[in-house]
Image (tube, rainbow, N blue to C red; front, side, top):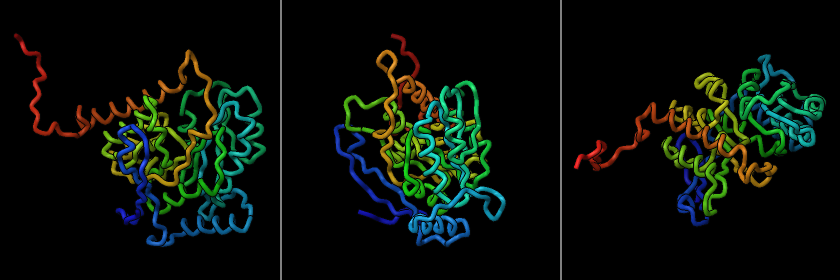
Length: 312
């Protein structure tokens, strides 16, 4: 079932099965309606890319007519020499004026050399920068009007990346992967729960578990200037701030990266990054409550709770 949403977006609703309560919700998939928007020069370049891809034409990265790259693809990487070349080759084909920036940090293999040979601009750091810090460093170095974020160990075909570029061209500011994580497991993974909770508290339950924590996602230069570079180190915070600022945050084209991502080695039976990601979401929630109140803007309905201790 499809119906017309606001701002020319088609909403395709689909139901998720399972026992978790979010499985009973209708989670929307927002796709830009390209035919109802004027074809701007930026959009025309994207459409030209599509035609080139269909004809099998390989287009090299080069400067656009305004002297800047149109798309900057940012890829943090550490010890990813086996896949980084393929990731870059697909990334370079999303648009004819694309730069690929690899933030290589803490590697002990040939990641930097392979990335450079594949045509990327490589920013190398001898020590690990910390989770998601590479995104901020890459964004700071980027010159593109659109910033697309990927990971160095997940190869995604360029045709599946272009919808993220299309959505920004159509007027979106933050474009998320329409992937919600496995919600039909018991118990639900805390990272999946954190993503859903943050979107609910941001008054965007329609986003489900879509999150800037995962890739691919894209942002406009407008969003970057509005929110700033530093929050990119905590993607859930950047997402919450974008929503609160009134920027257009949408989802497009679900890519189940959880199924193709390499399983991280567990430490003492736990994913070492799970606590970091959950804490990032808690920090985003703390920002929301500091701005909107302890209930994040939600009312207490008709209840009158006694918050002070009652002396008996």
